Length: 591
Image (tube, rainbow, N blue to C red; front, side, top):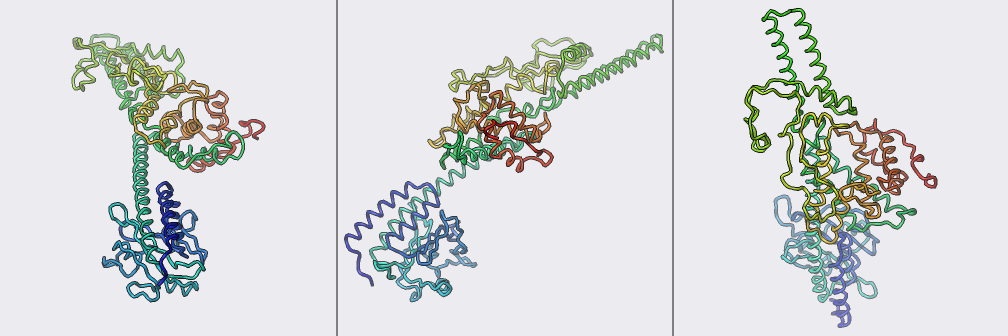
């Protein structure tokens, strides 16, 4: 038996215990926390070695940290060295509790075990320990095995110390006064570990929720699938390049562990406002597309117009008219209608610039009439019926083949931006929520989107900021709305929704703007454009740099760090990846 601890030693031990308790409560990193627990216990007992286990799913003890001074062994924790030993089972294959193993028994019973000499112990099976000693030449003797219990009395881990030493380094048993000290440390450690596990679980839940929202947004449209996954990845790549920069404008730029998580959240939520954007706008591949492509409706009208030509021809022949002359006129008119429909259909695709003469031809075609004999106000939803004129015309009705009708104007139920506009948005709401007019949509100059459609596309970032500002983010996530909400701003202040300049934007927000643009340029799942080759995308972004639309220093880093190529290798198709001469896009000093 060893002599009791001197009063001075006890006082020193209690002071150190208090210091360790304070340090444990402040530690956020899991590996460092586990190390502080084990190393603090070793220090208090002057133990030669020790192991810290964590209870895994209530079925086994997983090795977390392993240290041994004599064997110069350090595994787990911040060392990065994996512990090669399998977990200790708490139950055998038949479901019986494993009380043969001292660590498992401590976890199952919640009791502390102080063994003076493992080789003399009969209660526990130390065969594995003895085999280890025989292999390494080590002599495992005294053991102090303490369960880590949280505030609910649940065992969350086990701390095991091996071979206490006296002042001369001789191995001695753990003293009776030492065990309560280590139990007190274990209790504080268990609470700190349990709190961290709860925080990690909440963090994992929040991260999973973000991923769920991002996946839902991507799944909402087949044409933007993967965007919410790729933009955060590219953002992280470029941010990492900025952090690793040893010279230049980003030499002093860095992110803390909390800020990296903040960036992860911002990246995952940067387009959360798209949940409010109608699918038929996001997926609008043709000018007449709403929930369906209305070219089919117009084709039917042309078919009706052609039938009317046939009917008029037959009536005229039956009335005794010149059959040959009437047939020639009929054929000419049918050919004209075919050509006019083909022109309308080509206009609908939106792949070519609509010159003024084309718009004029479209309006002439629209003036062609057909006879409607059925009531078009029946079988409608309440909302659609409410847009119809209150006075019904008497059937039959002569209508144009193409029209911009009153019911095509979908009005705003309420302003999409709150009246107080506390966020400083500079976007003006268009007069109508949607203008579904056929001539109006077919006359779109470029692409397939009207001004109203573009407003709703752009409005997703407004809704993103409003949604994120509504969340009670903790202090370490307060910048998420700013970082996520600035990826459509331009460095010269001409972007949206706030018209911020470069000086008004943080580095992460400017990084995300570059990531969003490059992803969009190279994406191969957009209905309105062909995926750009790598060289094309870089060239386009170089023009945006010259026009002060993207941050010039970050764009240069994007090229010189090779992030553009790293991203391409991971996400682009092989036929998109071509050679890029980045020198032509860099300042002379950066070449």
